[in-house]
Length: 238
Image (cartoon, rainbow, N blue to C red; front, side, top):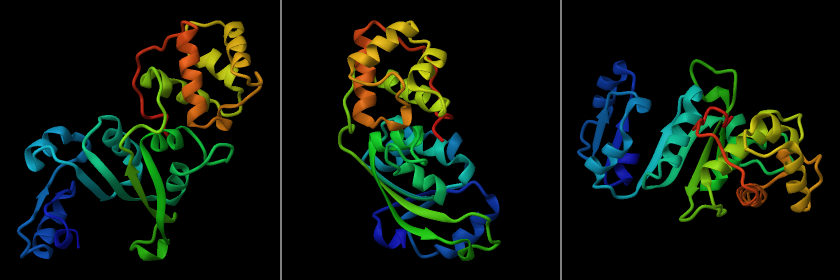
């Protein structure tokens, strides 16, 4: 169906046993190319430039659940010309992607995805649709990449560092999380005053903050002379 509706389809498949089957299934289509390789080891920037002249692409995938987050964050963080991602993931993960502040599913992954995209669950796929039958339900989620970031901040790296700290220890207050993990160059007393200056109770927790609040907090820390250690890490987005 993708071949019938798209100008060109580039499919990356890691399982070599499936390549002959795909060749038979797609016989007759001259607009699809199958690459037998690992998507995590694929230079996507080169692929997009060489295969599509750097033009915008749409991503459609049934993602292996154990590498869902690394693949999505690679596509979003590296600023590839992606306009949308329609992917099947574990239902629980799809719920986290579109969760709102104050709910149990809301976390670092929610903030990361919504920073770049509008997220909408298109359908839930029950275990009975698969053979062998898995233990979990799946969901197809549509991520429409925004033309601009949902919020603006003075330092995007610091923004995500603070988000990761805020959700790293969910039972702790935001103040304690930033003091214990942040390494922001500010004392606990300075952070306390900073939160009060934003009009927040010092007992506030990270899961109650939306993207605008995280952006305000980031800029306030910069204004106060705080900093972030350089340690890119998408593993916390879960």
